[in-house]
Length: 115
Image 1 (cartoon, rainbow, N blue to C red):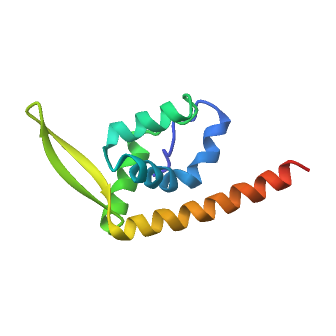
Image 2 (image 1 turned 60 degrees about the vertical axis):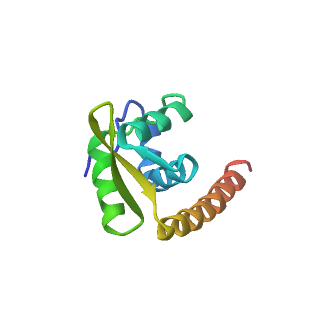
Image 3 (image 1 turned 180 degrees about the vertical axis):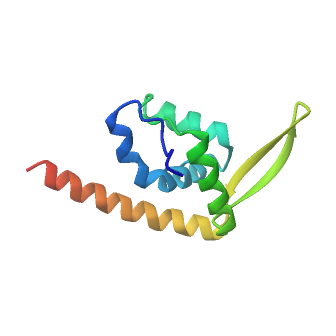
């Protein structure tokens, strides 16, 4: 899983360690999303700074599903099957915990870098 992000610039390397947090946050806001939708929403919110590759996204989604943090459901859309991902109750708790940890981390970074 070395292909975590499309590294168009060095900034993307900072996202590597937070990819799971990003996915869980998006799912907490959007309720359910399919893979391509997750990548596009992240790209949109970061104004193109973050481009998740399929090689990074799908192995992580499969791991989160195996860990019981997300679940998937398949729906037929215009004759095509589309796999949606949703947070489980366990995933909602984990997302909230990780968000609190991330907010604390960002606060501390801001404090350090603002000196």
